[in-house]
Length: 117
Image 1: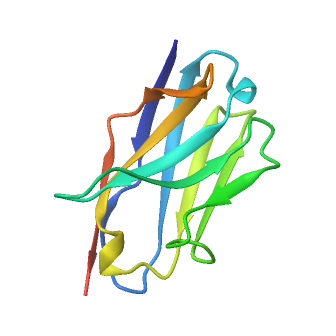
Image 2 (image 1 turned 90 degrees about the horizontal axis):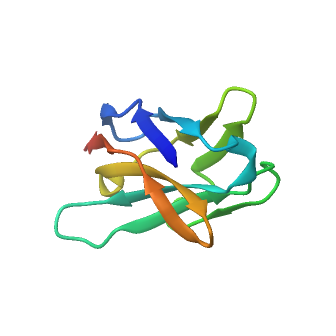
């Protein structure tokens, strides 16, 4: 079992920055990849970024490349999403997730990010 809690969302103007945090508990944190996803109203959930258990391998959606950075601190059981140059189209509920047994098996409750124009 993995328990995930996101924080750091809020309201920001276009061009601004936010840092999302995800606190994990349960299984050994470094043993599984982490991901950040988002879902805007009326849209499907989108994978934003992923990071390997050791933090070496990362991947990003084309829509956020060069603006967002995913990272993790395995000593603190934390994952992060640094979001810069935010755009109104980044507005969504953001979720962190843990990949266990080849599936995104565990999810946080989500944190709202709203970018005003």
